[in-house]
Length: 181
Image 1 (spheres, rainbow, N blue to C red):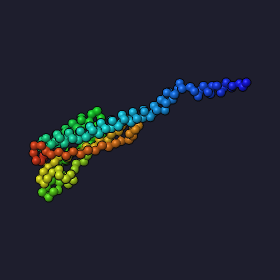
Image 2 (spheres, helix red, strand yellow):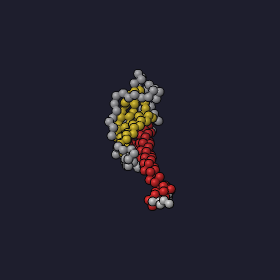
Image 3 (cartoon, helix red, strand yellow):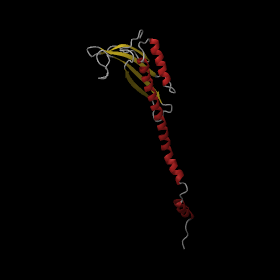
């Protein structure tokens, strides 16, 4: 009769024991699931910041397009409203510019006036998408730029810059003058 070694019995029992399988599987899968969760949270925050920046830019153009004439103070107040639209995100890196453009009889689109917050004024000629305005017509162009830095910075490290441009026709007059822009 052969005697079985006590250590071999332990190894057999250990090989058949399934009591810790769930804990081991969880330990393997948990870091991946946590990374996916934080990645989605960061992506959603960045997407929301991009949408709010876009909405802020469109609001600036929409407000200016509703006036018959504007001045620098009114445009600056409109930029301040654009910063409020961006909430709850900080508006320190929000840059906005609004420009009035008129297309002359030769088909050249020229800047009539421009004003910016964090962006330089435009001057000279501007490329306007075809079919947007005809000769003798004008349009309001609003541009926005926002530097977004994720608060977590694990999945989206660094800074992402979001840009958007909106084109709106003046609503009440053919061209909106700015007395001191």
